[in-house]
Image (cartoon, rainbow, N blue to C red; front, side):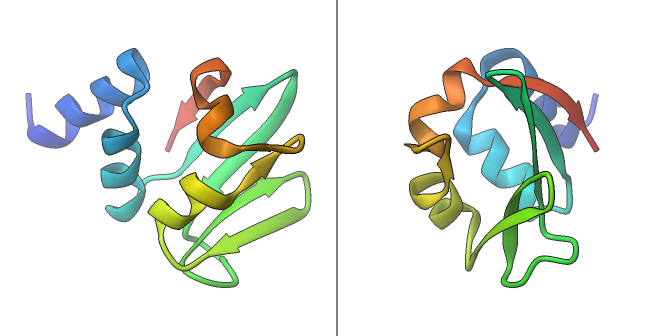
Length: 91
């Protein structure tokens, strides 16, 4: 098993924020659900470095750290809802 696979497991099994940061910074994309609504984190086609997408609405940030600290999901910060989010797909 390679390091990348171990870190992906940390994300999907433990919802590790460190794993999320590593994987997004290394080109992975994440789709997750919160309160039945789908969200997508990606660097692809982002206005800045990385974006959180909700349908066609984009919140764009200069770093993954900034996204985690400042993105909002249903009037809550990303970091405050992360534990309740359901990971759908790690691309």
